[in-house]
Length: 300
Image (spheres, rainbow, N blue to C red):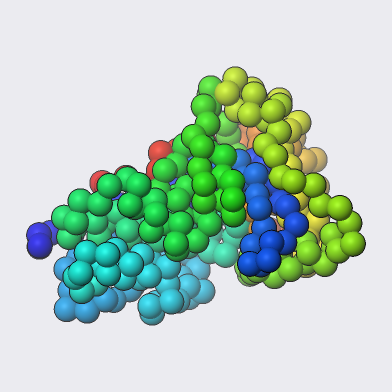
């Protein structure tokens, strides 16, 4: 085992399409989930230790567990178990992705920890083995490892890379507090009870907009089937969406299960204007500006 530290940088994501099917017998939902990695990053540093330990710094770290329930710790345990070693590692997480914000921060940390430990321990796992462990950890974790753009099917873990023809500019408005993903899916089930929920499929016009790099076309195609459920649980998000749209965003939607809201804008100048207007509106706690696509988990 090497004695050096390994740091991995891993991006946030936005769902430019989240099509949700009816609940399956196992409680999950089939998805057509078009992921786009964005340039907001967490960093996970793995250092040899006598036992598994988690520390964290950055935004809202008081809201994340620092024990073995943290997905990053579970990633280390699963990798170690596969290779017959003890998960003796200190994982330090530098948070910059909003916590419990629908941008896959916890999933990013898991993917970052997995790659950091694989590098630190020289376990030399294949890409497919790493993705296998990612899928075991959670539906969004495989994409955090891969980055770029991808269609996630099944419960989101079955990935098909997608071409992106340009740079897209985003503003993210961070709300007070988080939203539980299971609670949002539960509200989706309540709101759609007794209705015929269609099979989820990726929208051809959205995939074409990504491929061409056309922000206006992408804005017209953005959809999130979980948005009504998120707004039902957090009605105040409607005012945030309206403020960003009034400020000139091409499109606005709840990011994933929320409560972070995402605003697609024309260019970097528009991003600054929309960010300033959102902050001034008093409808969110903070704003973040980022571009996409971004690369997946990367050893620094």
